[in-house]
Length: 466
Image (tube, rainbow, N blue to C red):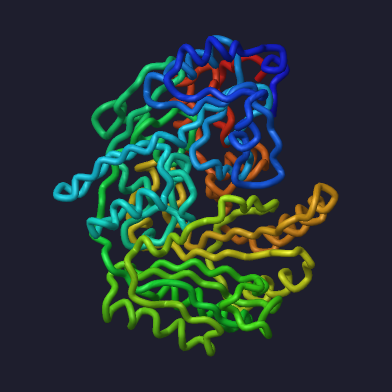
């Protein structure tokens, strides 16, 4: 939300251009509309300036400018924020997309990565060495926002969350200073950025552990979506070896060329599976899923791990609403609830996405990082596309009711999948003592809440207009 203060403040664009090495884009520039566009449609925010920063010095300058002038500050990496936090009305966008330096130490199995890299770019470069860090399920997502919120993807059961591979980071905090944070230096801040989102500063670089992930067995498997198949899929995913991570999307079949026309519009389980061990063990792990029903599409095969991230269409800007939650089980009754709700909607696209967790992720103590949901068993996202603003309330009602029907005993939420849902939902992402500790660290490093365009952790002292 735009503050009244930021509306009254103007930015001297010529002076800003003289002060930074990167490109500064303003409302009068030809690139402005392209530069202000984020991944999701439905957000039409108009920043006063967009700065494509070139490095730490530019970042420090922009942070100091925003703090000193009371400007609303948005941090943009991949631009995939579900709440539109990658942009601002009337403020300044600190855009990291050109900061893509990557230093891979293949022998030491570590990498220093600038925060403008996408998951696909990093994975492709590391894959050339037969190495990987687990990110999410979409190649165009920026590693910055994804890492800071946790990171749940194709290697989560084998190697844990993305933050479980994070060794260190360089962070520009609200005072404009660069800090190296790790387990020994600023350990409280290191704890907070592992799950606490962008509340504490701008990460310029991450140091990740790399794991040996060369050829995998993985890809897409499409099955008919009956309650029996859905419940059995989740049961098999829970029983599978930790090398196998799965994402099951229960949805109407889109008219993709590889889907037989007779299935278009019918409910399917569009599953993405990845077995990090590969080889014969990977093929054996896939067999129970192929046996659940006659596959409609079977694209599972041995492949280099980076092929799990196919190229994205840069012109694709979906308008969608969604809800995220954790649940404990998907039995026949839950599967019927999923089918019934999907069949009751006429949204052009609607989905229930199910990710079985556990494995390496669950072996990290909940208090070790700001991601507090280590014992959660299944991550669920329900979403629907909307066609114009008049259609959005209907879809909001559907996703809210669908999520409520699925809710069980786990009251948590995954911060990276939250939209514009209010403080109560942010509290669900950071329950109990996690919230209290984050608030204390926030007060220490960002007392005026400069970094507030995020799933915000407030401080006792608020900045202008807050």
